[in-house]
Length: 395
Image (cartoon, rainbow, N blue to C red):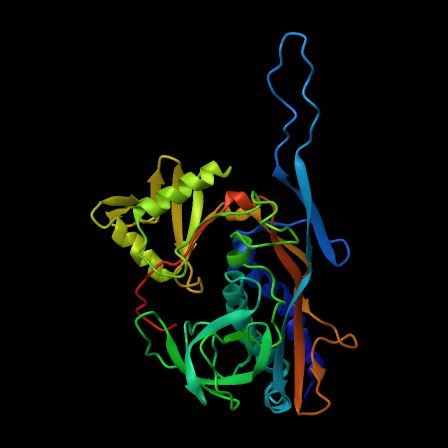
């Protein structure tokens, strides 16, 4: 007998597994520290942006310096919502029900496993971006139904994307094909439906997510305004950023050393983690390929540059398949904070997790997480941008 409640029981059974998988696999959950406890719809705190000048040398019997205070300014972040839906056709449930209650639960669990794999991929991709929801930028347009984007990793077949030119919405397209062929800079010409003719500079955003994503590494680490603080006014609330005005150049050992030195000048200390694309991993290996190194984790000698020692601290590199092209993020990532108001879990509708549709022969469940990422000691981090790299594959 078909039983939606039996499938719902399966979702309840696997909800903890969903949370554990997310905690183990999601980039921000693994790397970021635990944030403050939520109160209401936002979090706030204060950061030190200027020094106390109430000090100096005085003559014998002279007046004490005028008392001063360190300058602090408030920061504030608002909660963000990440959601996913999973759907099962009543036909699938009916076929499973004919084989018993266990089969119904297995059908629900199988579909749940698929959506979790995709949700983690989605979450990881945007955790490394700038919080705007941007996925890729059009390099070459002008043809209805096709356009060349600078990065295909966030463009999924049969998924809708909102196209913006600056802050102006253009229209929504659906990606129909992402080929494995690509250009010298990793650009990919994709096919889409929707009737639009895209132009260079247009940006594809995940549908409905324009400006609504949690902050990611590319905005948390940088020199732009963040969390309500204007960096042009409070210039110390910024990371060390080595950029080249949009012109790519090869990574050098001197860049790594300079950023480490700049970070020390900016108040950062100690060893740091470095995160970049797999192709930047190849570049770092090539920097040191003439040196025999020892990787203690593998217990074998070779040209493994998982770690680089400098006079100002050690850099430990990690590749991430979703990291933006041409960038390296550097810092003690546990000092980036992830505040969670509602852990990822199912949303109850009328007391049930799996609910019949009123318009189609399906039943669906919804997942929701309420969270935001933030940073207080932004000066502890650094970033190198405008780096060249040779991509060997599209995805």
